[in-house]
Image 1 (spheres, rainbow, N blue to C red):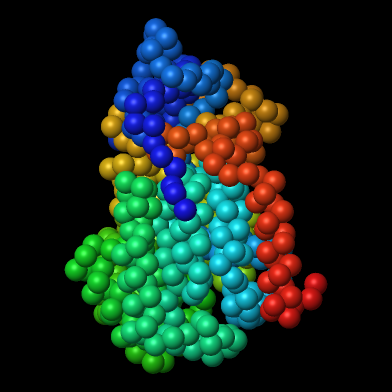
Image 2: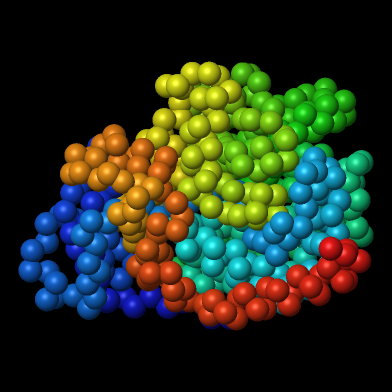
Length: 464
């Protein structure tokens, strides 16, 4: 399926906005303009008279332009499973989810991805780090190509049974075969659409991958610079199993096979100790913090303040709609900021609002290795951005001084909702405006998603 084509010379002016740049000075620019040419930000400032020289003008007076939000841990493949499993621990939850994933077909995985991307665009997410199921990964990439989202995605790799979860024959294969399948997908998809689409290798976790498979991913990553996406220290049982079999904690073990480095995103990291946090920081690996999923599945609360103290780069991720109903990064920001205050009974503990917003923007960009291209609104960077309209009671009042640092970050993180996003742009192309999805048919997505989940439930033998 063809990807979205960039109109190379198209000139778009966003006029009169408050711009939260996230540039090195963290400038917040009031009543300023952004000129976009093709897929890049050409100029920022008071660009008087420019409206006559562009192809499209977006009037944004009273609105806030932010860098496109970035989610560093998602499973688009599970979007169809929303609200089907609740009040379970991770292993119980996985029993049902694995059955549904095994029932996927090419069409259902495509519509799961389309539904997920629709939700992401409506909430201002422009870039993702996605881990797919064990099959039909191509169909997820087809959705990514069609819709225009910026994405790293990859087939989940597992070659080892994990006691306590009912895996199917489709889930677990030999290390050689599983890695070869991923290598084929890497060769097919990595770098598509001018680099908007990238492939990442996705060994599921230390307890579902053999040492051989983990080393294969690490060696390929080291040789070719490929990115790696892996669950790490999500539940206490994971630590117990790895310690029993290796004599090491999870992060130490992953480091021993070459997977703790600046090309790796470690999802969750709930049960890491100070030594492991220091190792993650020293190696330059990235952590995907998923507060809602960890609370929903009773996995625990990641020690984010300690990670910040030691300089770990942290991104945010909603994980998947199947484990807490949605993929709303505004919800993740709120929880990331609030839950640490409650747990530590410390009102000024990090992350504060600005640091939390950094996780959802620059932190995510660093995790994807794209900080020179996205994550902030700066001249020369890709035009990945969102416009938020907070002229609503839940985010009011809004005197001029309230749209300046630091209160602007509090308004976005503590008050804003995903429904406040009025425009989402990726690579200079508007993919959502005023609630209308421009790179897909919303009604078709909704109908086809419903049809697909009913088919999967029947195939998996699950009745509701």
